[in-house]
Length: 299
Image (cartoon, rainbow, N blue to C red; front, side):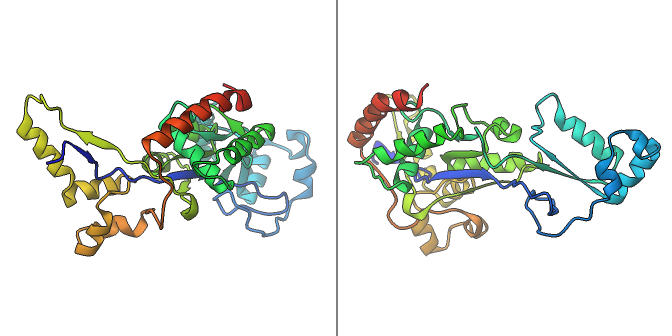
């Protein structure tokens, strides 16, 4: 048995994840996803010109008019800001006849790498993905830096650490990250009503392999070796696959029919020749980022 092996779930694709909320125009209605339906909205002129409750008559008259409209669009109200989440839920409970659609602006100050690229693996690989899409490669890193510089100058780049909480609050609306991180976020955020999606780009899929080793002085050498063998079974490989990673034995599992078909149906898999790099490349790229990221983008 080899003492050092690539683990089954090691092949991962860097990912661009994003919220699918979008702002509709003033003359279009929303279908509940935050996307414009293009349908014309008839607005009661009396309601549109009202400047006080008295213009409606009584509170009951206002409630009646609102229920007749049957919809409310609110914008930029993250649930963890001043407890807006419960405020919105309270309104929905009190007025169930009114459909509430929550909208967020198309990403000002919310585009994020998951960390600093010279310090965090997820950010490092996210940078390489963006660099590849910008026309660079692992030997030409400048296009990626130019891209993030433009993001910063446009006011779209944020340097906050990404969590499902920052996504839920709207602090991070676009994230460059690992598929397996975003797969878990997607499930957690769905329960909170956030429609979070992620994708990879075939010409810029970045893979990085995790390695496992057995300590030569392991106190339980047989159990350690059994663990390593278990990692390469179809059961373990499929569990990694279910978690958003690409198991290293995926191709052979497709051939012998042991891959979980339900997971395969919806999974994002590595296509063609992904972007990869050696340890020497990693050291060189990290040094380049250390020398150029902070002075160009800032801390």
